[in-house]
Image 1: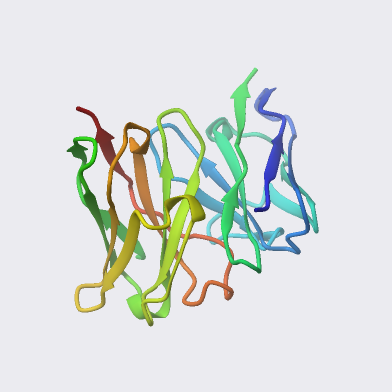
Image 2: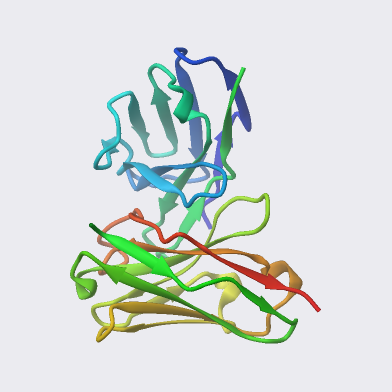
Length: 109
Length: 122
């Protein structure tokens, strides 16, 4: 099973700052990597799919990059509503299974 | 708009079964699949499995094989997830999410249902 490791576990930043979240896979997942945002009491929301494509309605300050085993979610200038937990997720080709990273909590400094 | 609406909270005793529903609207149900994801209190996300609404093909997470069954009713655009032999560590919020028609055709979930809290307690 492919394991996704996210870092850091917690990131403390101020509004207006740039956030860089990392997701590392235990083996190559090609570009089959997605990012989700989850706020307390809410369902996760898709931000990025296939490593670098923004989902519909997602602001341009969110961007994704990477391929293979190393991926990054960047928020260029934090807005107050961006403070949440972020998860990466992959799908392996064989056997076809999905796994999530353990999450990065982005908190207000 | 595309929407998934799940059934309400459940309280079950250990050893019992639970069946959660997920009603889809705003898109052609049989052109996609549904994945189920759960989240224990204060924990991360765990993928449980996937079903194609087109042909009923399923793919379950290894740790739940034999305890979980996913089905769909195309006449009502509703997906179901049944979990049997419940244990206390099955206490979680259960989410459905729209996924691919074929498990290899798409690698993300969007949108998600609102979640269903299942509490397992004696």
